Length: 341
Image (cartoon, rainbow, N blue to C red):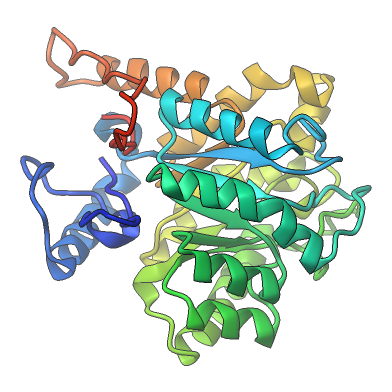
């Protein structure tokens, strides 16, 4: 399974590296975990599903206008309750965003973004949760990093010098997302005739170099190849990216995929955003079979259950499966929210 980055009051190893067999309850040194991670890259190419190495990020949108659930979790109490349910359902990390990246979304100032995030992030950190903040704004990155969040997730891929500087000053993991447009938002533009995977590879090489030059350790970086409108208004580039995900393994870094309810699934199925759950799960399982390390999703329970069943069906699994871990924590208990195990 994937480990967890440490949160306040814990001594768990950082960077969510997979642990060697039999070492689940040991406190490992960073060097040991790094070696274990690099040794596992080749095996993950053969498919993460059979080894339970897929970590789940649960999505919490503290927004008015996110395309799938805008307005449902704008109140702090609703967002906190939703995040706790995602954790109970099996999320390793909660990804909290306060500005939608949908093409038609409203602009949100950095001050408003921070005001939306503060009560939610503070409450979840007090509960021992591992938090990712989804933002493109350097001021928001700095404020949330000071709060102690474990991840910074930038759909603009840390393109600006200010974003790189904010990332370098933090200790968080950095999710670098590729998009074909240079705006901090998805766009309904034609995909064009270029090789989308080659474009993503060139972008990642550039951003990795910029972050490392700023002092960011390579082990902090996670790559997200983008999906949906971030790649083009048609389904074709998203499907091409999914088919060729293993090509992005050449960077030796974890891959994260987020296809949940996105536009290309609607083009394929004719379903509206709220009706794409089955299509989402199919694409997520395909991504897991392609060897990704992390999947960001709205429906954590469905993905976790699907991964667990698929894993138990894999060759070489014991006839009697392990009992699923208890999902509801006792009051005050920190959940070991690692990947499906």
